[in-house]
Amino acid sequence: MKADREEFLKEPVSDVKVTKSMSITDLIEAYNKIHGFMAGHLVRAIEILRKCLQDSDLRVISFTANLVATGLRGIFTQLIEKGVFNLVVTTCGTIDHDIARSFGGTYYKGYFEADDRMLRDLEIHRLGNVFIPVENYGPLIEKVVYSTLDELDRNKEWAIYEILDEIGKRTNDENSILRAAHLHGVPIIVPGYLDGAFGTALFTYTQIHKDLHVNPFKDEEVMAEKFFHSKKATALIIGGGISKHHTIWWAQFREGLDCAVYLTTAVEYDGSLSGAHPREAISWGKIRPEANHVVVYGDATILLPILTAAIIE
Image (cartoon, rainbow, N blue to C red; front, side):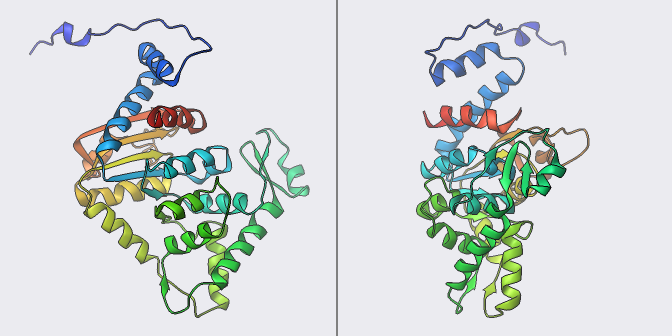
């Protein structure tokens, strides 16, 4: 069958000019006119989330820990506070950074090209272009985790998300992800909870205090409950790795997500999960064939503030 040429030539690309008085709506419309290359994908992501989040009873945000070392931490907190998302799936480093920054640890603006040998001598960790004093990370996190675990009831079996809720209860930092999740009843699921300072502190503590019983399978019960009983499920997945996979893994048991937006810098040609597109997830039943989905390539520290402003406007 010969294709109809007119089907491909419906809407022209338009030139735009920016002004200092542009609103978020104006900016998104400008991206829509620009269209190429990721501008059009970003507009599509906003359209999907605006529609799907309103209709979904399960609204998942999945993200990697590196982003929580930046000022995006406040935006993640905001998205929880405003009820945009009601389930968080992330990595252990998210918990580390949130605890450290919630309990007095300051992170500093740095640069990628720093001399890492010199930084080691100065006892400064480097995460990309963020500098973290050693004393503001591991020792501080261990202290907070230990003090929280000391106060837990020994007569119950604790899920990881319940321990995180207890930590969130104990901070007054208004930018804390854990605090926001506690206040709004949003479970934070960390499938790789051992892969960081929080997990190590939990391990060393339980080696000494054998009366504290931890059961991570209770976290999986939350995932099962949320996904099995959801009528419509939408996910914003930022980055890749275990947090991305755990989200779409559970989605397959309800025949896939109804809507999915990926923000990533990972490529798909190497077969990695981090770079895999939603169309690949369709083959696994992790995203429904009829689902609304899009991949936006770019740095989340640039994309997420725009996306968030457009969603909550």
